[in-house]
Length: 400
Image 1 (cartoon, rainbow, N blue to C red):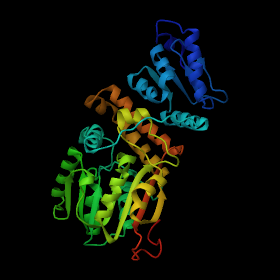
Image 2: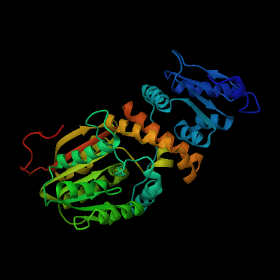
Image 3: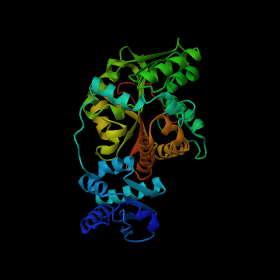
Image 4: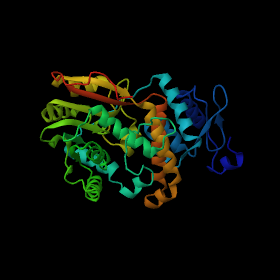
């Protein structure tokens, strides 16, 4: 509970009957959540049952009305600006809200444009070209910005990211001398790992200028230029054939309208006995990503269902699915590591950007963790091959 002294300083005027009505309307959207809703003058609506785990405090009328108009978007906007404060453990508070929202089965569809090459380049620049020093503050030493794999819950983030890269390679059954195409390679860690640990050659595609420059420098430093080629280009420009096609964390940025394009790229690239792996954030039921996330964090992003990926990427080319695994809780733990590292670097991030940016990314990381712990989002790994390929593993031995 906030003190009356602190709340009295938040606004120069008392709340009106209309303000209190608006607060009740907002609270009704998540009535089952154990959260207190409070106005600037101290007026509050406690949880319907049980003790509160946190408080949502509106500092002014503008923030309150914006939630009535579009809570999905303005939750994040007002938190960024500081006109709404969230008191309590941020992840737990968001988990409670997501569970309550899910129980109401409220979904609001918004138009998401196609990700042509220009849009894709803009979207990638918006998120991934924020500067390598920023990401170094809270990612692992390999600079892997995708779900880690924790063989045991107590594994370090560094060990879990190495384990994830090794899991991908084992699922693809990579053998020395094979050719690999990676679509969306981030800072190059997986491509370099495949070359170094499994003796393959890799052509890795990415449209982030900063990431490609970083990856090329790593390849030179590790004397792997002869095995790994980092190409600054869109996945639609992929050419040549390969024994394995892998995409980790890129499918979310493709967009459903362009899934057929990705399917055609894989089809023309993969050899007769080739294997493929898609690692992506997904959903159990089709729904758009949060409007604020798409505006501020991941423009153009969409998390597909397995059915959408199968129907529009794999089935048209008669690919056979060999294995599907859901690493949802591994991503929640990954985000917990990232969130704690990010919060410990708040001062450095604020010096690079500003406080609004810090609040936005704190909310993004905490909210993402909550979406995985509550089952709103999934993390799928799908392994596939051509339907005519009989050179496939007889058992799952060697895999978890």
